[in-house]
Length: 385
Image (cartoon, rainbow, N blue to C red; front, side):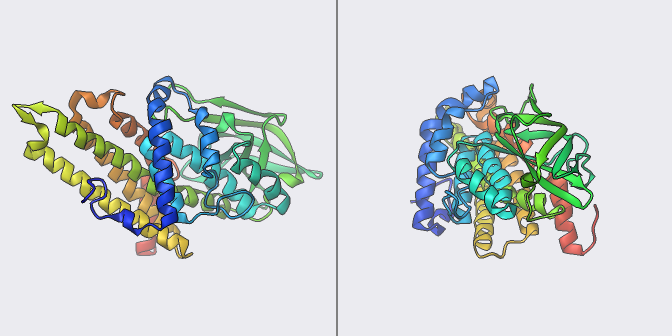
């Protein structure tokens, strides 16, 4: 029997372990996320009560090896992102930031001392992290960042501002990227360090159940041991972004599926002109288009996962998947909203919540325009940046 949300039986491509991750996270979302996420979205608060369950399931840094991390396949990580974002983009964003943007640079570029100190605590959810790259005037062009770190004896002194930082005000440690005399370097800045402060972005209309902050660094002094020794230059932060983009390409399909399933169920229940609206041609066309787009996006995400697990995934392939799948999710959400009519704009249904969240997903970890130019450069050999 065909499942409407999986017409091409993509789930059959999963291993037993990956299917177990899917079932476990889907159950968590059904039982713990969906009952509370609407209220958190409305109140503009992050559901911190979910943190113990996320940690206990091994979802924090799950695709990293060692140091208390689960060491799953990339596909398993993608599946978890898909299921979490079917609940809400804010929950998937939390996982992405903790694992791909905060833990990954420590795992990939940190010293053994840094890895041993931070990663087990972060995997257990006892320490939260954030990723300080974007600035008020340097988003798509991170090389233009103004945050600067200078040597002062054995220490470093950092000055600058970071903006739109997920988890910023709740993080115990921030991975801050700054210009130095020898290139861009990553620094581990702990909460409570003198001169380091955060403030939350309020009045958001998107990702309302996520913590979004500004980081202020005013003559912040950190020891030499706070520097990530394994990388210099933009390769460091961009490799982290590619890890997060991979998760987004899967997560967007979760949001799309949630919107499609809501529209399909509603169409069967809602009657007009004496019959369910599911029986009207225009409604069926919308549902058919949504289902087709979801199949295409999930196949792209799965193929990207296969390439990543085999060590062959290229940044341009990640850009293609992020660009295409977020656009699919946005189109599905808008079409689903029309099926639900006026009910689609209330929090009684998930569609407008997902639709609003996806406006942020379209922009972060590289705007649609940036990924378009990455693809264009790969295809033509000419940079249009």
